[in-house]
Image 1 (tube, rainbow, N blue to C red):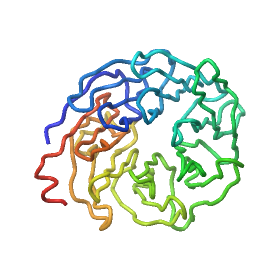
Image 2 (tube, rainbow, N blue to C red):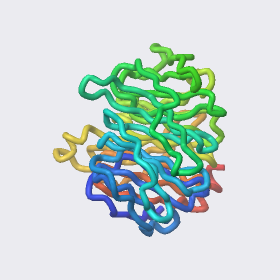
Image 3 (cartoon, one colour):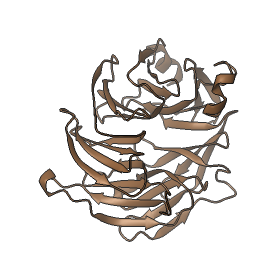
Image 4 (cartoon, rainbow, N blue to C red):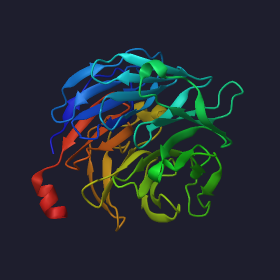
Length: 326
């Protein structure tokens, strides 16, 4: 599995996202410039210029026409994917940490960090079909969780919002009323901050990664803990294969410690686990620093990783991989 190295960012990667068809890959980094690549050969197509801080996340509409990005400059911006034109900027009083389009792309959920006396929040914005009619009004605002909310995604049929972050608790909220519906059990949940959250292709379950050196698989409706994957380093990113019963987990030690260790000692590889058996089945090395972002192509035949080293690595699986593992 010879990777394609994509160098388009000057600072550490923060997030990766494929388009629905899997032909485009979007990357976010601390250099303030989201970038789009051909997902097949790693060719850079363009950048989206307008942010003034670390871009923490992005999401792409189902028809691949619109991109939304969340940034430390206290904005979430809506872009035209093809032209790179900024269509609208949602302004907040705090840095934006997570964004996620609803099914149908008529709404987006946005999370903001605690900042200068403002608590963390989950906000829902309506996306207008005509950009001239777009407003910054929030359809719903939820406050309450302590600390930063690192990820928030839509649940089944847009009826719920699932959030997770620094306080180690996963929560399910009613997306219309903002009422708290469920919380993860503290006995079976993570013991340190939840750094990442990624849904399965069918939306029936999701995986969370945590600084407690584990990733956990959850039922998206009941919040029942299904599986636990234990590793020897903090987990910064995780993803579920849409094709095989595999999950990939990446992380490494704190960035402040990286310069004092070699890439081998730092354990900077992406590790694969069997989703059902919870056993480690392989790993892919290469990054010279912690892995901060992971994503599977929707066809399941390739995946990408983004690291503290500023590189995006694109990995295509060998055909034999599927013959052996199917």
